[in-house]
Length: 256
Image (cartoon, rainbow, N blue to C red; front, side):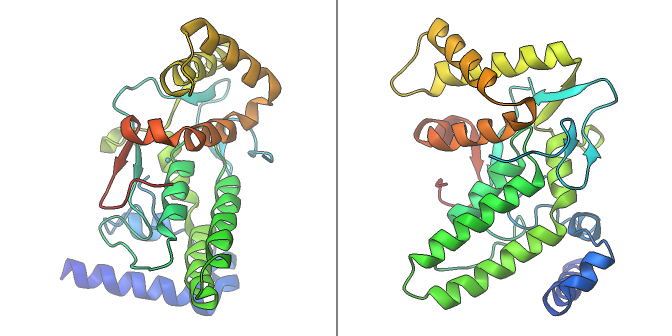
């Protein structure tokens, strides 16, 4: 019966989004709020993981604060935190597709669960990946139709999933992508994380000193609000290494 109620609720939400997306926007619907209570967190391929990233210290276009006033977010120090990818659709209810869109959905999962990204940035990257995949497919029209339905849903309803993945929910035992620090400590943590990343994943390998110099150079090149986007691109660039140690792959090919 619970499964039936869940499916009926999902059908109703999908109907609203498909028939009247402008109405959904006016109603300020958020799929995370609608489905979270039904045990369906993770819709759109994330289990809550360039341009501006919104105000630094807030989450995407929704402006949901990650940290208390006077604090800034930086990658969590919890060694148990992993990027979790489950392809397209809600966790445990993957959407079947034959176009290779799962790689884009995995990238969307990664973007949501990378500390410092904005929802708007993740949606832009998601749409661009879908468009590129469909343009290269023989059944372009059918591919685009399915891609549009996926990007439409995450665009309208993904806000709270992104926020929850960034912040975590300690009361529910869910780890977050970010911890909160005083500004100087946040800068230190970003440098520490980037240094650790380059030493562990760079190809060719770097010494600790080389990795530290690289981290300082990269961080000095970008604004603080762009750090999450840079980190996301680093993880994808070195995915041959990162996908083996930094991810949990939930019933999906380990590809971005």
